[in-house]
Length: 226
Image 1 (cartoon, rainbow, N blue to C red):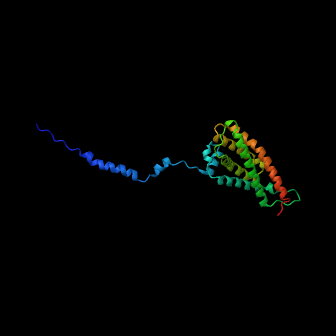
Image 2 (cartoon, one colour):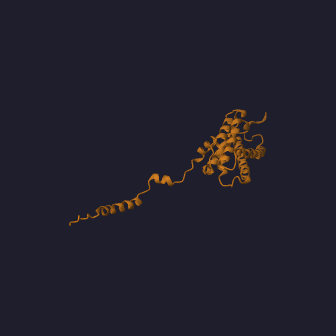
Image 3 (cartoon, rainbow, N blue to C red):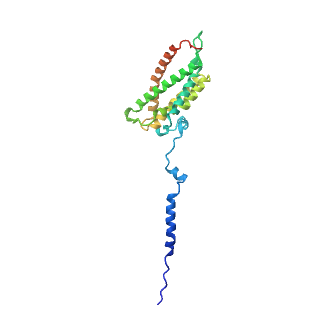
């Protein structure tokens, strides 16, 4: 009885080298852009987008405030310059010459920095009460971003001569923005608690700014150099 001849299994022999080559070459190929995007850490969008998100009352985590510190310094510097351009900063009593522009701008920057630093220091203490915040996160950058849009608009409109009564709603909205930023970054803190911290920090900040203003005005009596 004749048996059919068994064909050699050439398919596995023929495809084995090809499969080994494909497997080896897959390790040698450079990673595709799509592969790197999957594992790359999320990049921070910077201070500008963070500031506009806070101005729109969006709650963002502390990680969004991990932008370079110089951006916050530049933002407070800009607000201080606009505060110094307020016409009331150069006004002097009747019969006395107005203060020079450089002095008004310098005074505006100094008062803005004092107000900002004192407010941040008070908020750091306030937000840690009751274990609401563990201290992790850049509160300095977060508050600078919360100040940027609303305070720049308020100070800019005041520098253009807009009456303070018309810019008051914008300054009040700035406090809401800052309180909402604290509530978004610190889950255990409510919006009301954040706004309360802003108000509490504003009192010593204004007192300190007033004292600095009096000292600086006494150092340059009558607007020397006008």
